Image (cartoon, rainbow, N blue to C red; front, side, top):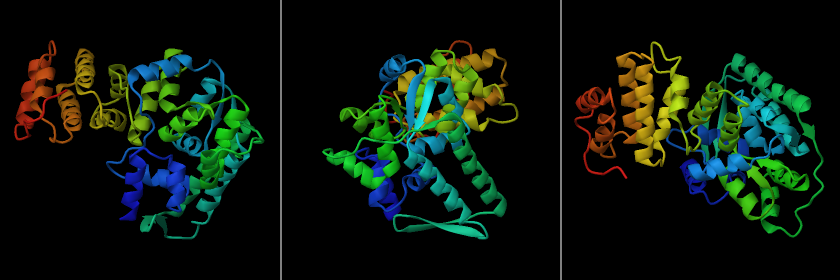
Length: 361
């Protein structure tokens, strides 16, 4: 299906999301929505390593002036976590076209009133969504709330710089006025551009359009500077993991914080963080971190049946449901002081039929 080819093109990481959306005749937000709601797809919000993350977080100015591009703005408002920005930024700037983009989403939701369902299109593929009136009104209130948030917490600043003489920025403008205006505004005001589209971040910095940041850097910086608690940090990481954003760093502390509320079952936050092990992580360091989490969870007197569930989800993710050799994973976990033998023996019984071919790097 063309929808799959469009998402394949994005995952190659060669073009920003807005340009791919333009060529597929979708809005950038609609393509983002399709991407994060498609199983096994990842939104490329980060492409660096842990060292790069630490450097970027350390270099982020205290109380910086920040411009937020529209998809990132809507995404984090939808997750009810946009107020993170207010703890790090002295001023939040928004291009007028970004406000227009949010207004367009309000009109899009209004148009669904009176319908039993909607028929969405990504590329040439049509997807039917059953929608209740209650869901429509809730979504409408949600987007109208974002308009109010912008008016209360952000400054709408006119964009003066044009795109003349910059072919790629001109293409960006043709693809999505609001995204291009956000880049131009950040350059105009010497502000930091917040975008979670890693290819746009790379392009903006390579072309010296603007200095950029992303959700991962903001969360790390806010945690290190004690602007948010470890619990809040873990919740933010879980939200991004649930939306299948690319990851570089999940800590044992974050897993311990989310798992503190796991009682009768593994909560969605803990599960989302454990599922990030499916990504292209460095396996040995991931296993060491996972082992530290299991030890800490046991020291906190978590029930063994709950530990077993963590082990099952973690091993399934890190071996990608058995497409990687499970034995080296069990060898590492088996060496954990105090709990290793139990974990390894229990896991061997559950993963006995899984392949044993590829070594952990």
